[in-house]
Length: 311
Length: 227
Image (cartoon, rainbow over all chains, first blue to last red; front, side):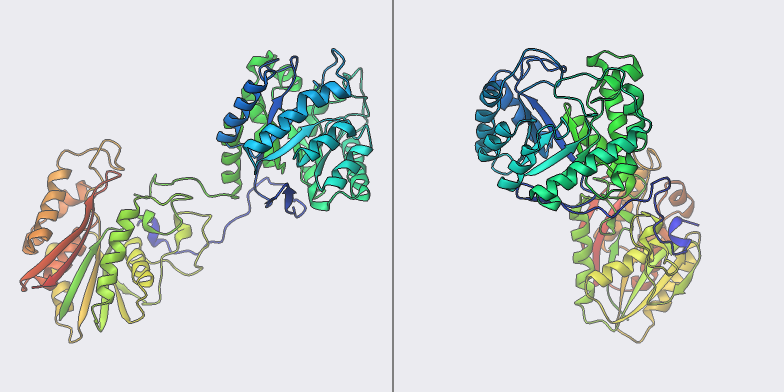
């Protein structure tokens, strides 16, 4: 008897092992409205000579614009432009950060009227100029260090990422950090930042939360945040994760920075399965493929082209 | 009285949406839609879908294929599914907008040629102006990547079927070897022999709308009419 003859009507089962999640809402970035279930890649474009991953590769403006062309072609939804490395190092003052990032934001906006532009900064002066130059999102990786950044986002109708940086000042490394419950702290911090952003006037559907892997966390903490990412998704706020090639991947696999792609993609897959919606990444094509695969496994998108067994 | 007939293959990939985000071989779907559309426009009183299945028998006209059997993400019809061949035939009639009388006739995969021919003759004796939608595929062993792997005899078998249909020589279909057909994973043999039994006395005009094996399974779409 062929499968077509079994004749039992079946309804679609819920995916096993998926935690119960709060209803997710539309995420608005720039002129776009992204439905829940649509997973977004945020491509990292560093305007720095000294970031940890391939330092200086997009320090030259032409090389940086070329990288934007590449990541857009590879399926990036968001371009995240940063002018100051997260790690400690040579001082980058406001003027220098503006010089590094704002002309570049203008250039990207001119080349791509529709791509979502994010600027990775903790400084409201930079955020203001970025929004004026066309940025749609302020990626406040240092956890609301300057409350005026959310006010700038509100002023321009931009979005904001509310991150958990372990209450550390910008450009510092965790030193003997301890949490009774790291996820609990992540929830407290990100939710209160989200409330603060709302009060500042940022639109409800333009606010994201980010547990900020490695920021104010050791590798155990980052692994636990990943394992329990569903607790963040359960808040209903769209969750951004930034795991790409980070030290928690390196320490977990005992792998140098150039050998962390597989570990990164594993973390991406788990975060996607558990409900994250935005993925900040260096390797766009690989992350895009992982997200498409996870979306199809979840049943959120159909596979691209199915013929096997159906011919 | 048989006014016309159409031959269509029955791969699940004909079902809309089942191949995912991309349409696969749209020209095959278009050819099937054209063949079914011609039947529907033929002002028949009844269309009989003839399709191979596990056993011979008729199915309730309201029955449909349940695509969730093949793709669990697709909505289930919640009712017992037609066999694949009849289900796709019913779908083609639905897509062509057919609302008239329909009979869903399964023919057992292992029925001998004589039984198939007798069923065809019974259909032919109907007083109503009847059209046949004959579902079935050629060999699934046409290439190394085919579902049944390559069988060097497959191309000649499919070519013989195509030649018979192209020439309007449906008697030749009566002589298809059931054992070889089974070995070559040909599903269409009994349905084609029903067609042969139903139209063997007529002089025929035929048109081949599609004939290829893009995935190593032979698909034939054709129209057959009394000349």
